[in-house]
Amino acid sequence: MDTAMAEYIVTLVASFLAVAVVLTLHEFAHALVAYKCGDPTAKWNGRLTLNPMKHFDLFGLLAFTLVGFGWAKPVPINPYNFKKYRTGLFLTASAGIALNYLTAFLFYPLFLLVMMLFAHTGYIPFVTDISLEFTYRLFAYSLSFAAFNLLPLFPLDGFRIVDAFNKRRGKIFRFLRDYGQWILLGLIFESFICDAFVRMGVSQFAYFDILGWIMEFAVNILGWPITKLWGLLPW
Image 1 (tube, rainbow, N blue to C red):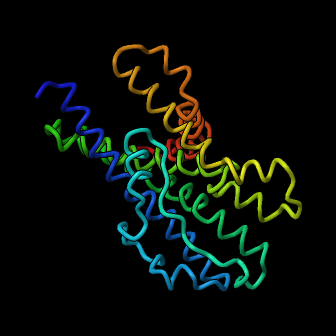
Image 2: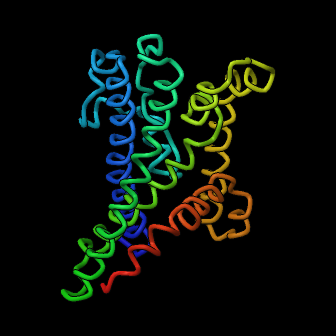
């Protein structure tokens, strides 16, 4: 097996494991907050759990692993069970985003600790690579999934946050609701194609990767307070 193929396999394995953690925490947060706001629907459907298998959507998982953006099975809720309709809807929709950002804050020092560990122990084939890739992607995917879900496109959390505050159902709202999922699929497919061309050596395609720009924004901008704060410690 050549070096490039070995690196690609390591990246895929690390991505898959990181996605499993990030998606599970995100969906669990939705289910827990919905339950606390008075809606037991997610619990009744077995979604108030940290079991990844209960949350996975096969195509969403593959998209996230290959492209860095994807989705899980939406947590079922009945907003009419909420003690306060709009408050419950907003808190439930934003719970996954908030938890992803919190876990990014916690995953980054884990990545730094792993780097320190192997700096002292030396390079261990495969173990070093998978450990560094996995812990970094826990941090990066937490941020990118938070940013991705802020997009106001159905069925993402950003749309549900808009829905919580939007009493009118105008043309823009209906467009985002009716065509949001197709726009998302188009963006993910476009990102996959751009990434494939970049891997073949056509680096110019990176400039056209729309979701790639979101990923870069998430890690560099949203992640800046996290990296700066932890960087103040004497590692």
